[in-house]
Image (cartoon, rainbow, N blue to C red; front, side, top):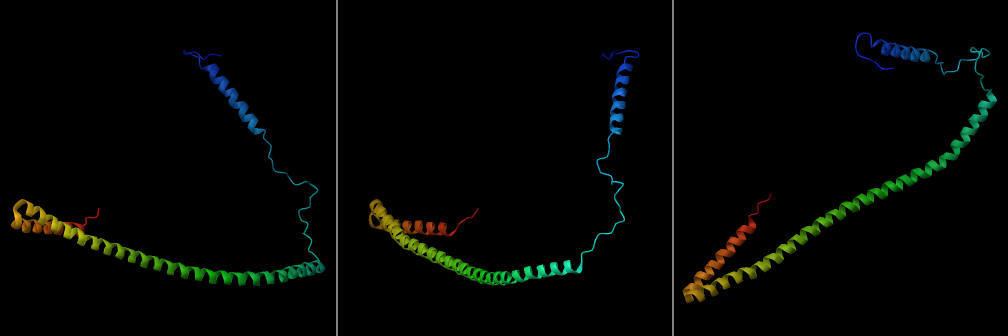
Length: 169
């Protein structure tokens, strides 16, 4: 069926859509509920049966025996919990001591490195002064050696100051 343009050409399409809509609506109206209805023989006013005193006493005795069996297990678990708590406290104390010792060792290592660097700096300083004096001697004999030593000391001072001033980004 072809829908044409022009006067009255949409009528067949309209009737087809109307027919399909009516079919879907009638199919939806035929859906049955899925819940089960109570059978007519079921008496809704019947009271549930209460257990007898003997049944209640037997159940109470069974529960009491099961509770008695659980008491030693609870006592054992409580003692294990106490042991675990004391072990945890000991571990926490040891961890704190270990961290403190590591911090002290790191500070001692930093001090040793700084001391070693300072010892090597004296050699570098003396090498700068002697090297400056030698270069000054070669350039202008004895008066030049004094100027060279002063220049070496000035270079050492500049290096020391630049090492002390650090710009952290």
